[in-house]
Length: 240
Figure 1 (cartoon, one colour):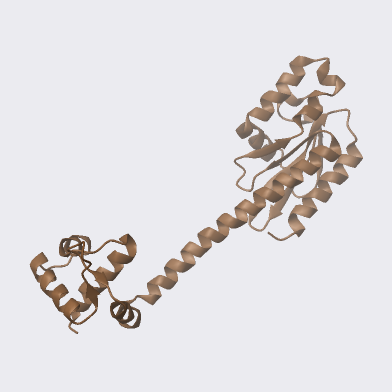
Figure 2 (cartoon, helix red, strand yellow):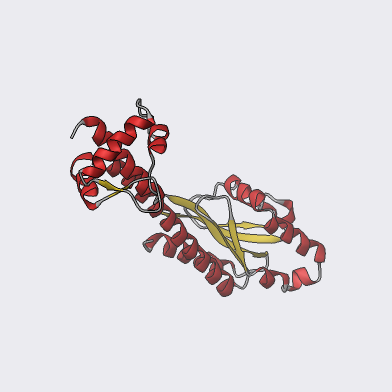
């Protein structure tokens, strides 16, 4: 078979795989930038049909590949090297997306545990450090310090609602891998000077974020320090 016929067959098969629609000569000339006229393509298509590589459905003037056409494509025309590169890229995207989703689920579970065990706000930034999970806000608002001082309570809520500012604050604190405690005015944000924060940096694969507890300065510091440390290790030690 001559090269032009092979090129046209290749174009028909690729177009049909992509669209599931019968392929006409005009679509081939325009879509694949062939330097021939639609009439020439039609002649070549007629020959390909005669040889059994393509066929014409009754309802369309276009052509679709036959099994023989697919076999010729698989054996001689398909670009396996390019397909290998494309497969690697798509698999990497899907794998990364899967890992990110599993990381979110794991982090959410960790924050839920923190909030329940500490009876304070549990929080964790997602690996991209652009969003933060906060759970157990009602735990803090029910504390006597905030029931009797609604201004302080509203200030804490403002901080939790301003995700970007909270993340920037965590970065500015230079927390590192050790679990650290910030009490009152040691917290950069004035709105949470009535609070203490126990926080650590965690790593999951290539992902890095922060996990911790936020609550009133009247908190169980040693216990919360231990809980955050254990949650950090749990996040880092279990595979995703």
